[in-house]
Length: 277
Image (tube, rainbow, N blue to C red):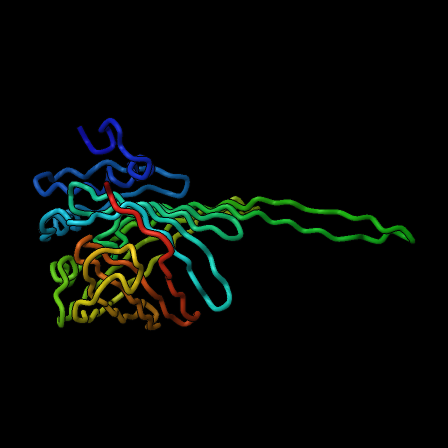
């Protein structure tokens, strides 16, 4: 019986089953795992990446596994709220389902390595467009309005993953690690004359790990200690970026704190925490 077949599986896990089917790591099998089809494409991790993940040390089960985190994402003067649900899988990977609010809604389902590297994901967004105006016909004015719902979906698959993955999976204070990550993203839209598009990118990243600190400084409900991790990298075009994480030692997961790139900075402020009971 798989995780997705198990009676009483959580809502978050049920939503992630399409990813779990391809994310379950089986180092013994030569055959490709099943694919999960979506409107934009299908999810599948290459066999060599699944073998890499299977060989990583995942340690013992976390002392304080997370269930739900709530964030405010602050970019300039704009703030959007999000809520993420976490499911630790038998392979040691994490399934994360996130709902981002604001003008419209974005739902993402991600298979992730410790919360830092997105291995495979699906994203669905809905944006409501409302336009109102008045048209003049002679001396008469007639109001009119246009309502449109724009829907997009995308599927992202990792194509290459290499580097100090064992150090990433179990970070140690005062150390550094590096990794390279390439992905392919296929997306489609309900817009007129739209078609499926595929984009690719490659990131080379180096991370530095600071000394332990009390995690309650990030949010009073968090437990234990954390390691602040600063990652600097470049994409395929040579553009630079910086990601700041908190690695929660009792939960064995990276929480994103900030992202900085050519577009500016986005800060992730924790507003709510729930642990697995």
